[in-house]
Image (cartoon, rainbow, N blue to C red; front, side, top):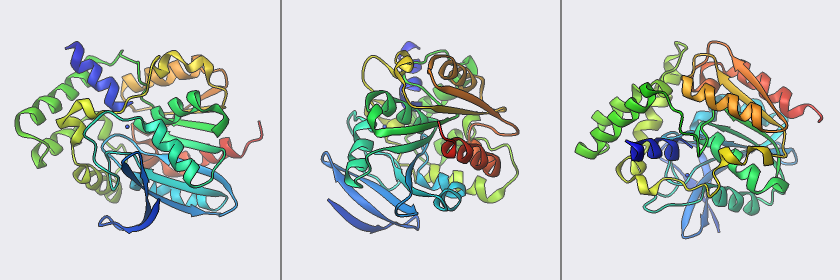
Length: 293
C-alpha cells in the first residue's frame, strides 16, 4: 500500500525540426538528452513568454481555451511533457525540469511565466525552486506536489483500481474508460467538445507510466513540498471549488508555505479548471501576470 501511495504522489506530480502531428496542429520537435519534445510557439514574437505545462495523461491540447487569449499580449509556448502526447515515450526515470530548461534554452528564453495544471503545476513549481533566475511568475492550477502523501482514501482507491487493472490487462480501451471515471478527469460543466477533448487526450496517451511506474518523472531531493519556502517568484494557486479534497489540501500548503503565494478558489470548476471555466481562469491568470509586483 505504501508503494502504491508513492506511485500516486510521484506520477501526479515527467536540434529542431517541424512536425505535423496526427493530432493536428503544426509544431516543432526539440531533440534533447537522447529523447525529444514536441512544442508549439505562438502569440507576440516580442512578448513576455508564457509557458503552459499540461496535466498527467493529457497533452498540450488541453490549453486550447488559453492559446489565443494569451497570445494577444504574450509570446506563448506549450509543449508535450516527455512521455505524453507527441513527445517521446519513456522507459526510464527522467527529469521534467531539465527538459523544460532545455526548451527555454533552445528558444533563447531567459525568463518566463510558467502556467501549469496538476502534474504541470508540479513541474512549474519544481523548476521555479531549482532555477529561480529563469522564472518570472508561476500559476499552479489544481496542483499536485511531489513529496505530498496526504491523499484521501477515495482518490487513493481510484488510482489503485486503475493500476491494478492495467497490471492485469494493459493500457487499453477498457482501462482508459476506467481512468476517465476518476474524479480528477471529470468536467463540471456540460461542454461536449471539452469532454471529447479530454477523452481524445487520454486515448492518445501511451500509458507508459501506468504500465511501468518506474518511468515516472523524478523531481529530485528534497521533494518540492519541502522546498516551498525557497520559492522567490510570485505564485498564484488556482483550485476549482469542486476539485478533489487532496488537491485542495495541496493548494492550501502551497499558499501557506510559498512566501509570495496567493490562492484563488474558482467557482463551479473541478480539477481541470482551465477547461471548466476558461473565461474566469483566463481573466484571473491574465490579471496576475500583467500586475506589476
